[in-house]
Length: 422
Image (cartoon, rainbow, N blue to C red; front, side, top):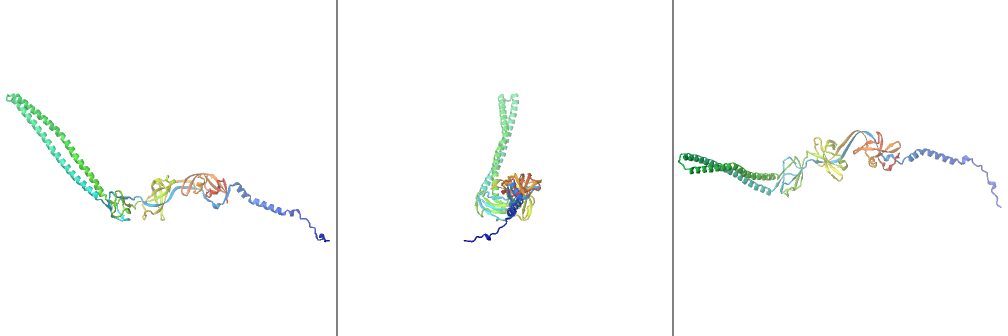
């Protein structure tokens, strides 16, 4: 038989009810405190669409002041006047200068040897000399013919007078019975014939100057035409000596010494260093606002010069338009062609308007909405924008001075009406 363990057992009193439920009470109190602490955050999350850290956002403040819309771009110095000289005729080029030489206006830069043109000029000059002789001979013949016609007229007039006197004498003789009537009739016929001859001589004398003038004029016109031809050839021969159209510097030599070239072949360029401009490329979207005469600002080497737009290209190349800006005052010294400078063109200027820093929010909201930080939220508000510049945008409505606008980082907002920022 085994002995039982009853003697080893000891009765234990039951713990009070509150002590048994103490862990549950403590857990409930802690949960209640946690709910109280997290209630604002939970409420914000429930009210807002999402939550974003403020450090991931770029914020700008709306201000009131002057607004300037401008375009800025890097440019290069180019010559406003850079003519290229071409061969006026086929021939051999003889250069008188080298690339980079300083030249004065009308200085001979190259000579084109053209034996064909020189020979043609000599031939036409000989033809002109022959026509000059023909013209002189025509004038001499005209004077001689004029004398002959005048002589014929004078002779006809004398013969009429003689016939008239003979008729008068025969009539008196007939009255005294010394002449027969037949002789009187013959003298009358002679007078009539003399008068007819005089009339023809007078008509020929009046017409002859016109005929003579036409003959001489024909010779003169032929001579004048040949003079024009010779003058044009002399001009072409004189143009064989290529002269500098402006004072400046020889740019490029496009042919080598003693090269045979065709007519209108490019030979060399001359750069006018006293009329330099800045050529800049602007985006196509801004090109429609550019106009000749707009004020500009040129900067480079720590210096700034006033300028103005001198030309705008009508052609768009790779989404850009070329524009040139000239110096409004005296051109700075020391500039070189293709030197890099910055240019900024003032397109528009407004006084006392609302502005905010430009940012990606314009593209994200299509310029119609923006997020304004108010307390712990970024609220979506409708806006209306006006003109834009490289760094600033005009606000027409929807915002007020002092509003803090999220200008970048709104991609995570997903179009929510309110977003918690922390």
